[in-house]
Length: 159
Image (cartoon, rainbow, N blue to C red; front, side):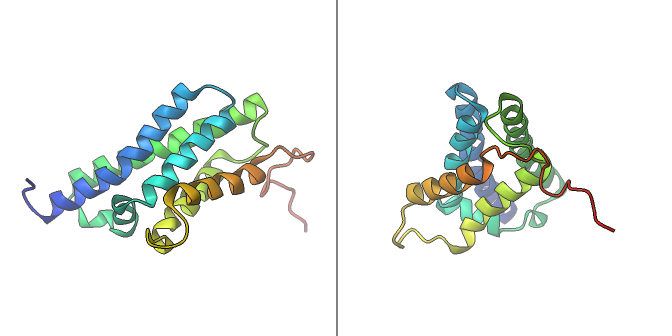
C-alpha cells in the first residue's frame, strides 16, 4: 500500500534503481579486471533500464517528488555514478581501461544506458539481455586501451 501518488512514483524509482545497485554489488564480488567488473554493471544497468520500472525511473521526473524523497533518489543515483567512476579509475590503474576522464565517461555510459528507456520495447526483436550484450560489446570496443595516452577532450587547444 502507498499513501499517495508521490509515494508510488518514489517506489517506481526505487524499483528501477535497485537492480542497478545490485549490479554494482555483483561487480564487487565478480573478480577479474575492472573492465570485466564494469561489464557486469553495464549488463545489469541495461537490463534494469529495459524493465518496466527502468523506463519509469528514467522518464519520470524526480522533481515530481518532495524534497526528502528527491534527496534519497539523488543519493542513490550518486551512489551508482560514484561506483561507475571507481570502476573506471580502477580500470585505468589495472590497465584494462584506457585513459579517460572518469566523470565524463560515467556520464556518457549512464546517458547511453538511460536512453534505452526511450526506444526499447519488450515486444521488439531484441530481448533485454541482447540489448545489454550489444551495449557491452559497444563499450568494450570503445574502452580498449589505445596507443595514445592523451584522454579525449584533454588534448592541447589550438590557437
